[in-house]
Image (cartoon, rainbow, N blue to C red; front, side, top):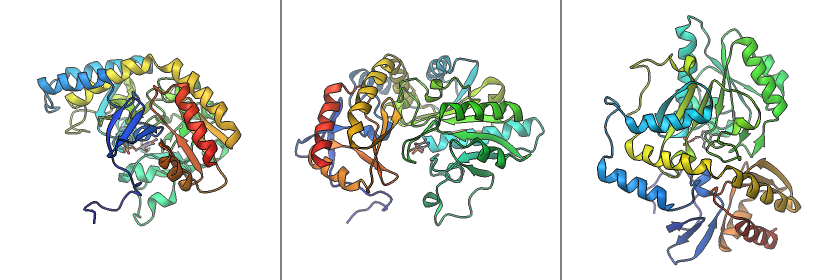
Length: 374
Ligand SMILES: Cc1ncc(COP(=O)(O)O)c(C=O)c1O
């Protein structure tokens, strides 16, 4: 009997300890973790610098309200804005869904401030933006909506990599276009560079905000600090979470300064957002991830090549998907027995979003296990 609501299909294993790229279960069995808390544990488990920063902060101060000055948020925001590359401001929250709620609210508020009645946002089929009402309504997947209708008004769904489908949805109320440069939960579907450039051009031409959900693709996951940086585009708003705290809950919205000014005292907030412990972790994660970018690209390319014999490989850096003909949940279970943690998304895609510190020898182990199973 479980006291927990039945919201997850949990695998029959409990982990008690983690170190680097490995997790250990109650019997002491070791597992190579290529799930990484679903793109969260970017520095692996129990990274000594992260543990030290968290413990030092825990001895000083855990939490004070956002009613007071927050120097730890300032320091973390500065690092994030430096990577954003132009004047911008940051709002801290606790998760990906919340970050996207913040982005949606900011987009609406931006046009409201300008006296324009624009509130609709174009998002993409098979996207995933989170489970809260705004983020769920932005998510264009029926299975996520089922039983929760009516959804929040204001979202129109286009086809990824089809600019005409985006143009067809334009209305005078359209405020922005929101996308993942690689759809994660939707099955590791890559937005094409040419398409992204066209989306950006459309945004500039029509005065729309370009919002990039970097919750899964951010923090070095694809080999650049932010995933959009592969394509030479400049979003107005981006959202982060998952890897940002390396396992400590934290998310944020980053917006160009002109857009960010639409939020005023009282227009948005979060009790825990940018908590001292969370920011202590995020600072270490950002600094360490910046040194891992070349490594992610190198190991990611190696991994991609080694996966090719098993099917169509999608994704970039250490955000990879292997498309199979059949449902891959069985593969996940067989891999688990053999000490390998992988994940199945969109039913037929084996997803790999490991800690960014994995080495080629770990990839080799995973390939051997997959060879046995597949
Ligand atoms: C792209 C993207 N956006 C938003 C979310 C939601 O994040 P959270 O589960 O932290 O609310 C996810 C989670 O998988 C995601 O992949």
